[in-house]
Structure formats: structure tokens, C-alpha cells
Length: 425
Image (spheres, rainbow, N blue to C red):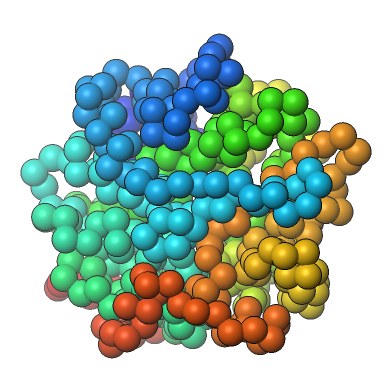
């Protein structure tokens, strides 16, 4: 698999290099030179999740990883289901929260950990990543205990749910967490500055587990196939998928699935009040505002890292960007939608509710809608209980970590301090 740096196409790497390196020159994102068109889509959709995913990832990665090794990586990573659940006529929830940290990022995080362990050299590796909520837990649990791989996770202090924080800030061992006194975009900026520091990068073997790492994106492609596979055959040709979008990695993965030939008619990029992309698609002007805190905190991103990949896919496929529908949903609308969904018998959380709301507003006659549920409602226990006036039991995975003390360090938004922290740990 050959990839190029979107900012500097002359920089080209293979899959292993892209996984180890994370980012290219000038913080450029790596992207596959070729995304093959699969001719056996119907045959793939008839297979179980793991077997199908092995074939999809083989088609994307090529012969760079030995077949038996790649098959084992997928088998080790995808140990939980991704069911679709009917919410109303022609509308289904794709539940991506059945993994160990109860969020969609378990798919990408676990596959990346397995892959990095397989392609690593003997040098020191430090995973540095920023999280607005769920990435931290998925990455922490995926890499926990792996030999000679250290993990440092930055997150905005006070801007993620207490249960999200407990899930990844209580592990210790090779997992270190730092609460930054700023918003997520600032955390993401600190990570980018670290990757721009050649001495730091080389000394500690920097890598990133955000959705900027190509291995995470490729893993996420697989659950779009799983969603379509669960639909009746007659419902597969007019499918619209609504994706709750923050850093836009999830949407990028869906667009790669469509590029491979998966029959998805169109996508909806659903955002909260951090609405840079909906405004851009409406006006043509890229004007990020300051990030605001919302109920759907994992989407509190005003400068989405993966947007260049989205535009690259549209350009390469000759798709008009107007085919991508996008809409922003306020907190008040989110609360209203959660209540409406609960009345219909489906318990959801803010991110999934946003995707559902935009889908119901956009879906046309004859279309089948799928919205992504990216986290278990209990991860947002306080807000869901308040909005719905119910009491949620904690799943075992959350209850266990909720009883443990936080192990995080705290730091101001200061790259010099972060650099010193990384060099001395």
C-alpha cells in the first residue's frame, strides 16, 4: 500500500511507515494512492464481520502484511459486534458501542495497536494523542500493557464527561494522561507542535493514535460494510448515512467504503454548534469559530483534522461536494430529540441524537436511513438522566473504572512545558 502526503504529494511512504510515522511533512495527512474498486460486494456482504473485514483490509493494504498475520490482527481487534437496530420505518441505528470502552473508537484503536505492534522496529515508541472524549479511552485500553510503547493522552480539563475521564485516566502503567487547561482544539494544536519538533519526534519516537493515523481509518471502513450487510437486500440501494462529526475521521472512513463500491447513496455530516463544515458547505468560506462546549463533547471540534481527506476523496472520485449534506444541531434541539427518541422506545445519547435528527430532516421518500450511535448512553450518564428524567445503570466496564482514582497530571496550554514533560518521562 503506497500513500502520499496530501500537503506534499512528493512525500510517499508505505503502509508500515505511515502507521509508524502518523503525520507527514508540515503536518500533512497520509492518503492511499489507490483505493480499489471491489467487484465482489454482494459476496462480501454475505460474510461474517471478521472474515469480511479481513478481505476488505487486504484489498486496501495489499501484500505488505503477510496474509495470515493480517487475518490474526483483525481477529484480535474485532471481538465485538456492531448491530443495527430498527428505530422506526426505514431508519436504523448502527450501534458502535459494544466494545471494551463502549465507543466506536474501539474498532480503530484496537486495530491500530495490533498493527503498530506488528510493524514496529526496535526503537522507542511514544503515542501522543489528543481526545475530546472517546478516543482517549479506546487508545488507552488498546495499548495498555504493550511492551515498549508509552502512551500520553491530552484532554481538555473539565470538558469531557466524568465517566469518559474515569475510563482512561485510571489505568496507569504505560498510559499517562494530561488534563490541559484549554479546549480540545488547543490539545490538538499541542500534538501538532510536538510532531513539528524534529528532535522531540526522534528522541521519543512520536506517533499519534488520532484518526490522522491511517490504520485507524481503515479499520473504521469495515463497520460501514457491516451496517449494509444487516439490511434486507431490497433496502441496500438507497441508503443514506448520517455521521455525528467532530474530527471527521468517521465520515472519511465511510467515504472510503463508498469509494470501494459499498452502495451508500449519500452521507450527512451532522455537527453540533461547532459548525465550521456546515457553514463552509453553505458559503464556500472556511471560517472556524472558537470552540464551544456542548452536550455532545466528543464533537466539540472547530478545526477538524480530517477535512482535507474528505475533500481529497470528493476530488479524486469526481463527486461534487454539494452531494455531502451537513447540518448543525443545538443543545436545545439535542435534548428535544433525545426525548423524542426515548418516546419511540430507543435510548440514545447526545451524539447519536444529533445524527438521528439530521437524518430525519434530510431523508427522502424511498430512502433507507442509518445513523451512527458512537457511544453508550451511560458514558453520558449525568446529561442523559437529567434530560430523560431516568436512572441509568452503569455497565460493568464503566462501574469498575468509576471506582478508581484519577491518575492525571494537569498542565497549562504551554508547548514548552509539554515538551519538557515528554522528554523527561
